[in-house]
Image (cartoon, rainbow, N blue to C red):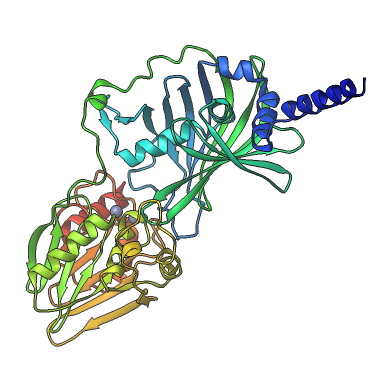
Length: 487
Ligand SMILES: [Zn+2]
Ligand SMILES: [Zn+2]
């Protein structure tokens, strides 16, 4: 009798132990129950979300810290095929700020199908997107409670590091396809509150992408959020307000278009091509692709205007500068403004020992940018750390020696950015600028302010040497500005 009692007690303890899952599993079980139950979640085939919201303007706002520029998003539709790992987004974006492409609405269609990310242009042409974009879009599929909890229920998923953070239970998830997320669920409602994943950003380095979920509603026996807010690092990048959503509705054909699916994978930026054009004695336009630089020769050193985009472009431009004048040290780079596509090569420039000359409004951002960790995709500076050397320009600065004079001016009051510098060569009557006048562009919303700044400083210009597009006579700028004022 005595043994029997012990056996019953032992069996009861065992059962109790089995019913109580480990805490990391319990968090997922709780989330699954709150969302409508494990079986319902695992049975879902497609999710279709429709609504609207906003997109941010990451890396392209008026100051490095600003977040006021947004695109209003309408006709948003996100269709996800959960089992196939496919998703497609269609949306229309309208800028609420002075946009370089003009103020008209733009339709966007983009998606992910397994390893293939693609964008579909306005003319219906599909292009394969580079592999880092594909990785980000594969991750984005799981920035939703349904897809992430479903992935966490997969027996091949790994759950770890259970913890509490404020009023949330938090667990790390490595999905069966080896993507890593952190999920936080509300300790009271057990509903997923947010998901975080890490990615590489050329300018910011290792960044957390966090999507917060709110305003849950019932949809076909499941609970789904109707407000999804995403930020990259500290910058808001998207808010979706769901007007309508459905489970297992007709998602349409979410396969990658043939043109994208059959295209070779794109590992990263295209190989650099630096086309050299001598503009005047001691001044070269380094073009060849989308973003240009200008090399300036002083009597005993060289200075670059702009190391744009990324390591690949910046290091190619730096190498070309050294090749053109091998007997003079390249010592400085002048940065046109803080926008990520124009400042994306500054870390490479620092790794090459160059001193950055920038408008003072951008300096704190670069001070932070050179110290940020780049462990996910180590760049030139991560591999070869160097201290930042920086000189700032408030309104103007003159760089002058026996053979060369360059005047740098802050382009003040321009809606494109508050940190813009233009470079004026008084002897050669040349102006170098970025973005505020792109010769040949269909619209030039920033040109009138550029003209105001040119007049303020009484600059005598024959040629514009732009950091996009091709060299143009000054009369082209005058024409664009007079056309605009007579409109
Ligand atoms: Zn810009
Ligand atoms: Zn630009």
